[in-house]
Image (cartoon, rainbow, N blue to C red; front, side, top):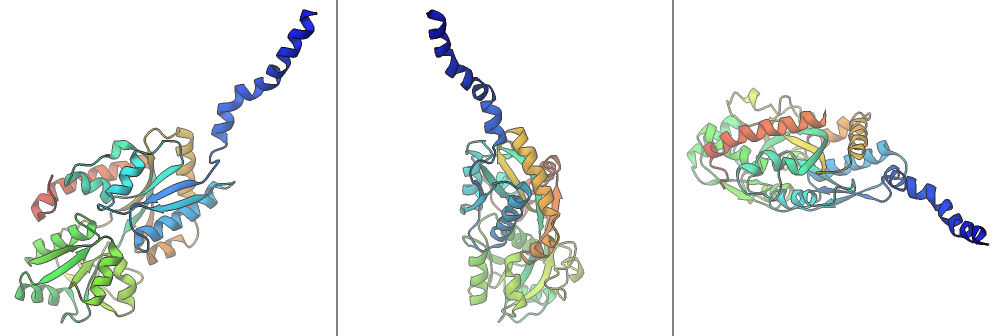
Length: 327
């Protein structure tokens, strides 16, 4: 009588055994089982937001299956708030950072942060940034030489806006001022679009930011030069900084990449990295990136990490000279 009773007890366990054994593998294979959140540490509407949403859309298609990505804007403190949020998130593959290079090159040199490059696993580099020097329409200048001459005749009277303290636009403006010998006032804003709107309204005199491109095309502001190795395809008649004849040490080419909290499963990282590379190869994506003032530029995880480390070192030498930040 004992044997049948024992068999009745063991039978349910036998049915459960395959699930108990394969449970972790099934859970891992199921990724992504629910929506992935991609944090963009900037306000909606600017270049970073546009690029982040485009990358999210193409990444979903490259991942296939039931993958979905929700873009979360978490602006503030020149990207620090959103970047720290992701650094402290669970490393489960469901929280990603569409990170700005400046978060890892500029900010570590000017303030104490709740994160570092070691707080993240790198998925890959995405794009390089293309900035534009533009002035308000009513300023009596039409090229960079005239602008510098006008600024020298009006020391301390001209102001420039940026996306925030120690943002790329702030560094660009301070570097331009130092290398050309002009004296200007920096006005930090909450994001690039706020600075652009202030320029259009005439509240500030100039800006160095890619987000100003649509207003330059529309004739609402006057573009003087582009900060990149080549001309902006959206502004083909505007010279590069090098073409203007000015020798300015503005560092061009910083951009964006995709990262995850440190400790994210390696198979998830590999799948994301492969999908990101595929996404950036999609036909026509370069054209869309250019409209957001960037050039699609894939970098493998190790290559992207190394480029950020090199730029952080470069900024550690540059920032004290131009008087930006300081811990």
